[in-house]
Length: 441
Image 1: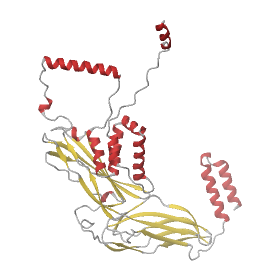
Image 2: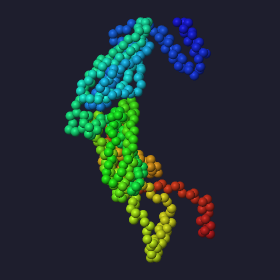
Image 3: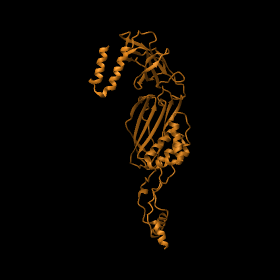
């Protein structure tokens, strides 16, 4: 052992590049600890491996609902190599959440042991009672100075999947689409605004649906957007799954190109998407908001024709009015016009407020903020608006339960026209104080 330690110290001092000094010192310390710690025989209770499903409060999940499996191993021995062998989850879809975690834990007798943790999200595909076969953690250990390979097995886990008893819906019917999730959010974006397009022009609509606690394959197909007077061209559907420590987040992006075929204003009805809240165990609804095509700009040929020439009396009256307005502006002083949201943005805020939907309101506010940075600065400087927005964010994203603000009053405040803050006045001329005495003289 003395020769081996001398070899390690010689390598750490001069034979290895300096940038790896910390890693080399850690490896040296681990080697020394392994050499000086006495090897001991494996006793009952030294190696334990458990698999625990986090089932809902009722004790049974529904088909395609996410359940987390917590794998935990506690080992009071030296581990040289390890490998987890997973059973064939025939009736489940699954994904691992993050990397394995290794640490140290204290045993009931006060001694320290190695702790292994892994989290797997499983999704049962059918109704019934299933069994998750044992997981096997294959360890290569140091058993009383002898290198040995041993398999530590978990217990089989019963896994009941409940039958849906609701009046409508459920995982076994085709319509409506079964969507079990912890939370669902929808964002709706148009380019350009649908109220500004005229017959023959095209607007692109992009709807993003996000569901927490789901895989992307479980999201519904593209909703049907059809109404009289428009032609729609559906684009490809993009699906992706984002892995987070609390579970996967599924995201689907739906796209349409919309072209009006008539000159009238065309209403687009809202599209409701029912989903099952796996936290409260109740059915809820998410909504792709209703919109209006046309009506924001003149879309009739008569409106676009140049006006007929005005007579001399009309021109004289207009000249007098313009002269009076110019005098008024000179008396008031030059300044900028008022800032306000456009009609579509204001309608989106008021619609979310009337539906008492904080998430839709926050999404509409975010789009308005990005489109109007000057207005956003004025909102931040308004104490009442800033306080209500802070309450809204605490309600949506805070750790504890908080009540939402009065969305109707907040929408009224945000859609009110505002005058921009005037710039600094020009500095007073330095000779101005001298003008008074000279003028009096």
